[in-house]
Length: 98
Image 1 (cartoon, rainbow, N blue to C red):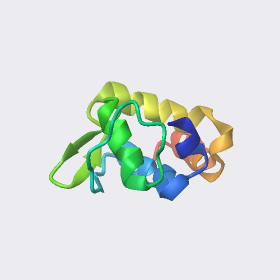
Image 2: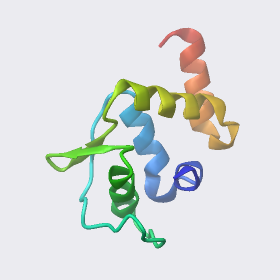
Image 3: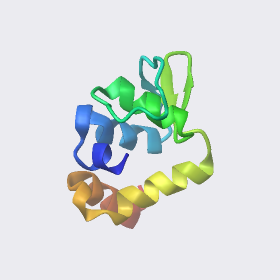
Image 4: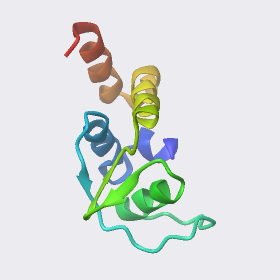
């Protein structure tokens, strides 16, 4: 999943920033086989993340299901400088307490 986040495939990284701040992101979750190796769209990425328990899906939107995962996603954003502007934005926000 880090590949999709790091490379901002289908704007997943941007959506993840919203989810870490507590927002829900609209998605069309369909049938996804956990063993599938082919993920080609934003909705397939989110479907996989729901299957693996990284996101939850309700009423047409995905979100981070609990504080523990929220903390892990936040840690990812703060610790991976390969995430570029998201990393820098998260660091600045953390430093200023915003």
